[in-house]
Every structure is written in structure tokens, then in C-alpha cells.
Length: 432
Image (cartoon, rainbow, N blue to C red; front, side, top):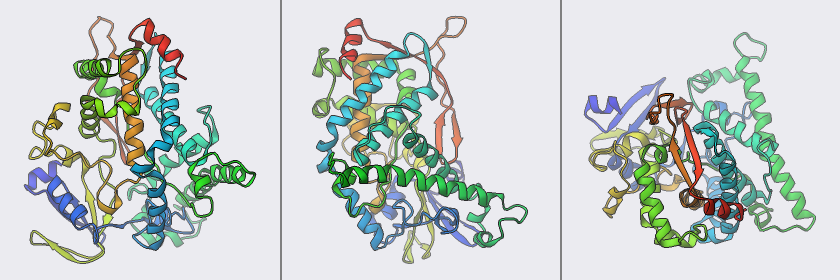
């Protein structure tokens, strides 16, 4: 983002070992190239560490697959199960799992909780919903291998896609060096990653398939598509605990809207979503203000073309710089300010945190519903506050982040989570 400002250009191009890489730093450029020209800018770059059959062997995984017939088949299957029109089938399990999240958060009261632990609780909720919806499997413990394997695989892949993490991503010929050769220890890491991938992908699927064969049809995605499902990608966004602790006035405004619309005798549901416009704006601002993934997944140009006088060669890697785009002052005025009411302007585009064009995240509708339930139910029943130091002064979370592979995570901070009242404690107690 700083380089874009120094060069006074929202498009930056450079060559890395002969590979053209184009970084887009504005909403306009990203929309023009990745949305309007999605038909020729939706190829996928799959690094050797991921693609090679002798290493991770994941080139056919939908996130990394090029725009071929296999990708189109996978995309159709996922859209048929996770499209906007199918969301009603998941709502009962979504609401139940978020209620369980409330119970776990309440159990942390009256002690403080680190933002890291809070993030783990949100991750557990999303993972539980993934396992339930895709496989019909109920996650009962954070030590469950189906859960721990998925988390470990996500962490491994977030490193494996980076050129700096494994030199083979820059020098593909290194794939062929013998395992015993000095400096080839990374190959053992790849083999361990492949074992982890096989376990994380195969075990839940086998569990669900065996249940289906034995006559159990639980409504899960696997039971619906048993004969053709291969792999379903998933993603999750970070929790909004940071903005809630830092901006209590915003928290209170959203809570007031929930109390007015929903009342205090029940929890919010997805049926209330259309009646809670400020909460909707709050969710949009949360994902814009600090996107967890600073760079979009790379696209590849499949046909040479020209844009603003610039030649874009076939095979060029095109990356949308999400953080720069959502801080583009030409689109989001006072972009560094957390302001949900900016979306009162109906012409303001939503932040492109789910990707662009043909490569937009197929699970976005599922995530949006879960995110709404998490935030609305927490605001309805709990207070999230910053902690005080030894002198009684409130400790305001900083905006610093930890650069963890492909993710940006807020630096750990402490929060206090407490029920709004005894009545709300009872409401949570009867929820799960």
C-alpha cells in the first residue's frame, strides 16, 4: 500500500524469476480486471509445493484448481449445496451451535479472556458447523481429531503457498532433488503435510460415507452428493471481538437496535436479520476495517490483454491487495475510521473480502449467516469490554497485527466478557 502511494499508481507490476506479478491496489482496478474481465482473469496459480504429485498433491482441490472442467464441476456441486437458496437447510444447526458458543463464553465469566482464546472459540464454532453441515458430524470437543486435523491443515497450507516458506515454489526443479541430499529436509515436511492432508480430507468423508451406506441420511452435504462429492473448501473470518472492545459506543448502538426489534425474552434469529440494518452495517464494517486476509488469492491471466495502456501477458499472476482496496480513500472516506454508518450510502460497494468474479468464495452466504448469528446473539446477551491496568486505567486494544503467513491477526489483548443481567444468564442457560 505504501509502495502504491509512492509510485502514485494503483497498479504495480514486477517480475520475479521471470514471472510477471501484478498487484491491484484500488477497488476500480480490481473490479475492472477481476470482475468485468473475470472470463480471462480467473486462472489459478498453484505453487509446486501444493501441486506436485510427489509433494502435497492438491492441484485438484477447488481452491487451487485452474478454470477447467473439473473446477466447473466442483463449483456447480458446491453452489448447489451452499448457494443462497439452500441456506434454510442449515439454519437450525447454525443457531444451535452459536448458542453453544454463548454458553462457553459465559463460562469464562468472571475471569478475563485473551483475544486468542476468544478467536479459538469462534474457530471451534465455525468448524463445528462445517463438520455438521458437510459430513453430519457433531463436534463435541476441541481435542477431536477431525477438528485438530482441519486446523493443522489450514495452518500448513497458509505457509505452503508462500514462496519464502519453501524454495521449491520459486525453483520448481528442486522437487526432483533426492530426499537424502543436504538441504532437502523441506521434502520431509511436505510428506508430513500430505499425510495430514489425506487424514483431514479422507477420515470425515469416510465416516459420513459409511453412515450413508448403512442407511443413515442426515441431510448433510455428503449424504446428498455421496456419489460425486470430492472436496469442499472452507474458510472463516476472524471474530469481531477487537472492534467491540475498542468501540463500546458502536456495541451499545447495535445492542439497542436488537433490544428494540427482538426484545429481551428470546435470542435473535436469522428471521430478524432484515429488521436489524445497523447490525448489518456493523458486520460489513468489521470485515472491511481489518480484513483477516490482506491479499486476495492470486488469479492468473489466461489471455493476453491491455488495461489503461498496460500490457497484461498471458500467465501473469494478478493479486488484489485487499487491505489497500478497503482503505481506498476515493471509495471509503476516512477509511481508517471504524464507521458502520458509512453504508447508509447505498452506492458504496461492499468490501471485496470474499474475492472476485468466478473465484468468489462459494461459502460466503453460509459464513455471512453464521457471522450475523454470532454477533447478534453475543450483543443481545453479553458485554465485551476492555480490561484495566494495575492503575485502574482502561487498556484499549491496539491496531497492531501479527503477520502469520497469509493472515493478519490482531496482537493478543485481554477482554472481559460478562452477562448483561441475570435474566440474560438464564436466557443463555436455556439456549443450548
